[in-house]
Image (cartoon, rainbow, N blue to C red; front, side, top):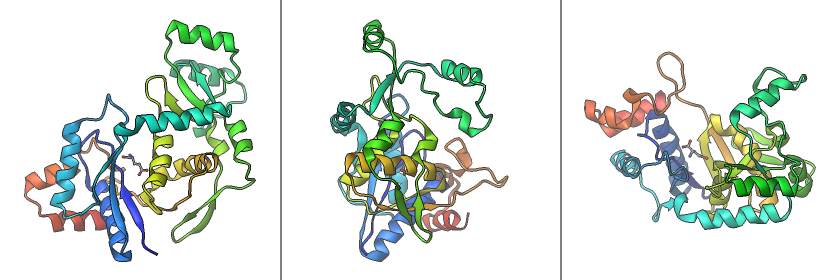
Amino acid sequence: MKYITRFAPSPTGNLHIGHVYSASLAAKIARESGGKFLLRMEDIDAGRCRLEFEEAIYEDLAWLGLKWEQPVRRQSEHMEDYAALLSKLSDRGLIYPCFCTRREIAAEIARSKSAPHDAQSLIYPGTCRDLSTAEKQRRYEKGDPYALRLDMVNALAAAGQSELTFLERDKGYIRCYPASFGDVILARKDTPTSYHLAVTFDDAIQGINLVVRGQDLFTSTHIHRLLQALLELPTPAYFHHGLISDTKGRRLSKRDKDATIKSLRDYGYQPEEVLKMACYG
Ligand code: GLU
């Protein structure tokens, strides 16, 4: 099997050692199978993504000796495609606008006596699910900001499959439970896509057959699998790898300046040393 893998960073900061692990693993799997390694810029968040970070990503990856196919797909250049997908879902009655602020959602959850006080409590309680057409119109005309949410109950019915699964490398088939995430956000008033919609579409359009990414995105795969069923897109295999932690056992993030490739380069480390650090980190 020739694997088509990808590395899909968001250019919102400098790459760190955890990214190196993910990218070099995806590149290695593709190379060893005679497949292809692709790079994608997940730059839909215009407020947080910066061209200088994108350029730094190319520079860091090239410095590490990684080679990727051209051209690089930049999500910001495909907003019309995402908008078209969104209208498809909307035409089927699977999307609704939600005008709630975070504060209103938290208050609604707190009001509900049955709300458990754990991660479940983050699930959107469905306040705007049944707004009347007139009310929606009134809010649109007022210019209120809104998110576009997937109506999970309708979506599961429309997907028409009693059981959704995906293949996890080395583990076998995993059953999906998208309903446990509630009515997830698929777009916002001024941005026709969220991470979930764009990543699902792009992996399909780029022909990715093995998605290599961190364990932190494992739960998102349940949502992506549902979107694949709804949009009749192929389901790749997945490899959710472990995450690299710092010396205190905390997950590395873009805030950990010392672990960025840029600072390691500035300290005088060589590419092979950084690759080794990433693999044994
Ligand atoms: N853009 C995401 C990130 O930088 C990764 C998306 C993915 O690999 O699916 O965390």
